[in-house]
Amino acid sequence: MRINLATQFYQLDAVQFSNQRLVNQYLEASNIPEARAPGYVRTTPGSTQFSDLGEPLRGLKTVNGTLYAVAGTKFYSVSTAGVKTDLGTVAGADYVEIIYNSTQIMIAAGTVGYVYTISTGAFAQIIDADFPGASSATYMDGSAIVSKPNSGAAYVSDLNNFLSWNALNFTTEETSPDDLVSIRDDRKELWMFSTNTVVPYSRNPALAFPYQRISQAVLEMGCLAKNSIVIADNSFLWLGNREAEGGVSIWRANGYTPMRVSTHAIEQKIESLGFAVSSAIAFTYMLSGHIFYVLNFPSYGTFVLDLSTGLWHEWIRHGDLWSRWTHHAFFNNQHIVGGPDGILATLSSSVYTDLGTQIDRKMISPVYDADGQPLRVSKLEIEIDAGRGLTSGQGSDPMMMIRWSKDAGRTWSNERLRSIGKVGQYNARTIVRNLGRAREWAFEVSYADPTPYTIIKAYADTTAGAS
Image 1 (cartoon, rainbow, N blue to C red):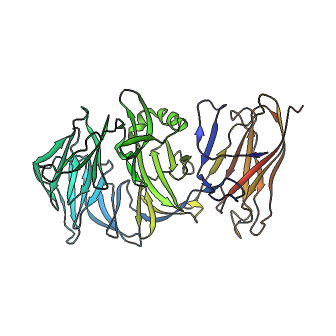
Image 2: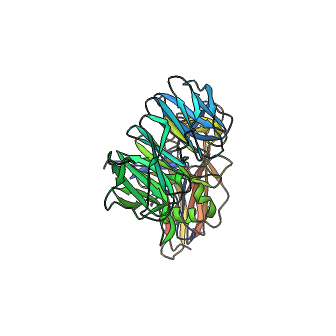
Image 3: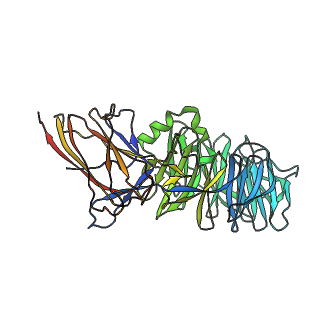
């Protein structure tokens, strides 16, 4: 029979029901009826070092063809060759937000803000007494808009000047009596994310704060982590919940309606993290036609939603529990990512290591049974895009590691190594025989060699009720 090794992360507390994992791989669904399978599993991108900023990354942005970063207490520009230039000093250690207009770049750093003038290279702290601080910031219609820390108030800068502010040009988001978590812009609408609600605003230039609430456009779904908010595929995604119901889910705005895009498995996993939920930080990137929402819980896990399929997978660095990539910018036609070690790296689907270190790819299948009868598995065959090994070194004889469980994933057999074909061995077959007899089967397939790796489909020869 044909079996699905794994299509997504769906590991529940009740592993007997579902223990499915997909680590550093994702499903490429077929959209052609004559395809040999409904889809195949391909690898997440590898990375190569682009630059070393030397301190934890706090913010990353491409502005008019130049890459800018805040790492540690320094504000840098980074050339296409990865050479950093120190442009100024930024207080604090928390993540920052970087926005820009045609002449200035603003860094929102909580109680303080900074402005870099692109043409002159001048870098200055915002000292206007009317500047309220900036727990978050966005740019619309010639002005910066910031949320005042620990309040429900939002302020707008003077036109085309991030250094100049008027204390009267503000509004207080009062749909719910809570603080603003963040503000974002989307297609000429200003969205205010609070603890309990999300409220879109439209422009009204007649007002001192030139935006007003859109009538009956309140999303009754608050935000739990300001850095989880991104725009992907023309809509907002964020980590949040309803005040009355609690819990935690990932939401996507469908117009002015929040649509749940997390699964019960993802929600169970996030809820188990407890206090770490508020530390979530996300980014989005597009590769090979897939738009990914990458949600990090630093030190605890990275979960990635493929918006083209609605399926989740895990992204894990070797020897760690998460990807260690917290920020992304598209620069010089490359996907640049960075994180707490200060390394900036280039993502590529044709690189099969992570900064030169192996990438551990793993899939755990759904649980298979025969309606309570014993099930004998005499052969497991995994069809691979074979023969793509390297000419020398690690990967010249690439090996797949296979284990199986006879109790739905609670315990596992010893590993069996199987070659997936040296270079040119396109007809290589990956087979394990005489697995035994059990009522609840699960299969695990792992791979770590630095080569292309694609699983097409898998088969098992089984006999139900066998003695």
